[in-house]
Amino acid sequence: TFIQPPQVEWASGALAKGPLLRKSTRIQDLIEVFADEPARQQLAGEHVVYDVEMLATSSAEGELYTGVTHLYPGHVGGEYFMTRGHFHARREQGEVYFGLRGKGLLLLQNEHGQARLENVFAGSIHIIPGFTAHRLINTGNEVLSALAVWPAIAGHDYAALAKGFTLRVFEENQQILVREVQNG
Ligand code: PA5
Ligand code: NI
Image (cartoon, rainbow, N blue to C red; front, side, top):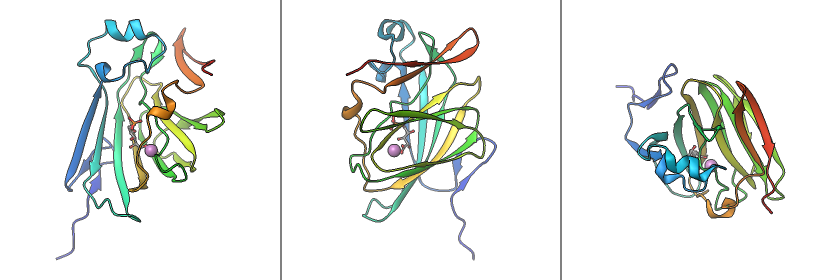
């Protein structure tokens, strides 16, 4: 007679036991997201870069959304696979990420273009303040999965970052290389 709540399977990061929404983002969807656009065009467009699973919960003001991002390992022109990244449409709204499995970085950038990188690993907790754009980057050889909780009213603003973040992360000689980008 007890309610069976939705569940995240720690080992796989999969959401289960609840009504879910799913979205896959493929190489072909990520036009001009990576530094080397010709390299992106050479890759198989159907290849999935990341999947997002979300609990189908209320979108009313004050409610929270819960989702898991599964970001696959890979590169485009040496740049690690990453999410598109966004500000929230409601800029003041924050979000929390929890690392579930794999290894990577969370790129955070404020409205002045100042960026920082946090290590993401199983058990890591990331407080994303308001007015802060965010993008996951998979620097490992396995799937990077992270759970996110954010206000339902936050919304996504992808256009504000059309010029990109001010940091890009590459693999060079089996090492992580962070490059600053001039994108003014
Ligand atoms: O709410 C979030 O920030 C995440 O669930 C992201 O939406 C998810 O990681 C996919 O990234 P993006 O929305 O930048 O494509
Ligand atoms: Ni967000």
